[in-house]
Amino acid sequence: QVQLVESGGGWVQPGGSLRLTCATSGGIFSIDAMGWYRQAPGKQREFVATIISSGETNYGDSVKGRFTISIDNAKNTVYLQMRSLKPEDTAVYYCNADIIGTKTITRVWGQGTQVTVSS
Image (cartoon, rainbow, N blue to C red; front, side, top):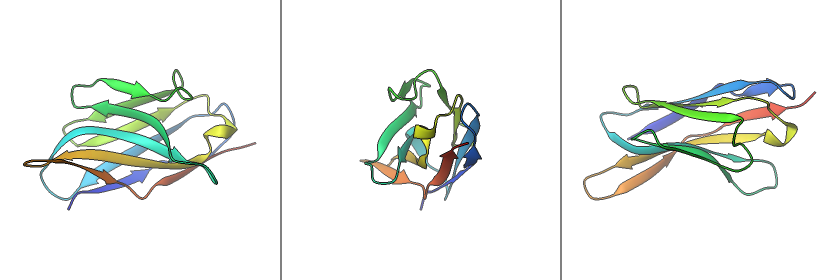
């Protein structure tokens, strides 16, 4: 059973930076893509960034130019470097991974890590 564990969240002042990490565990598996979503109180879950196995990345409009997603394929670990943080970036950040099975691709989610941006 593949599991994802996020870390690196916390409190930061506006303009600051944080780096989130999403580590995988649970055996040997292949990943098609990994990514991050976030959910603020009272709002729907929002796409943040994704990276596929080739290294191609995609970002949500609200984070382009400020956030960078990267992956360590050997460790099946994905990172989200967040810079120039704004109060509106405050949310629970969730990691996901698309696991390649014999016939299907299954999306697995982590439990989330809280990011709070305030002065």
